[in-house]
Image (cartoon, rainbow, N blue to C red):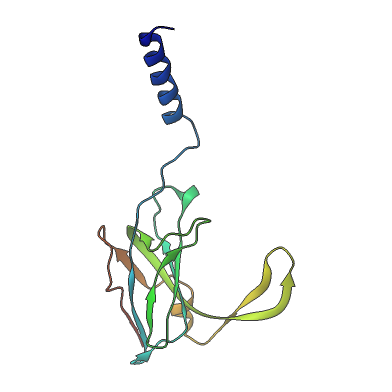
Length: 146
């Protein structure tokens, strides 16, 4: 095999890898954190869900979730199999939920989470509150719920 044949084969192999269907690049994820309050007090130990309003690829819609600490601070992480810190860039619907474990147990998935209605419905459904995640990420994803 000549050197030119070897180079041609390597180029074809590289092209085949790039053109393989199903090998889609992951959407960029940027760091997102902030503070949530309810009626002026920290919204402690609450799960916050960010769902893209208009995902670039609806089949790969990447949701992010975070849980507030005692001071209401949170940091988002994607819910992908290989979780990444942050959220995708763009507009998101935001929902706030307090979760507790139920009594049902699924052998494959573990205990079932049950939503505990402690906040008004407008905050728990993720339809009224939105947040636009900027390209560089943010540490100011702050929410003052009333």
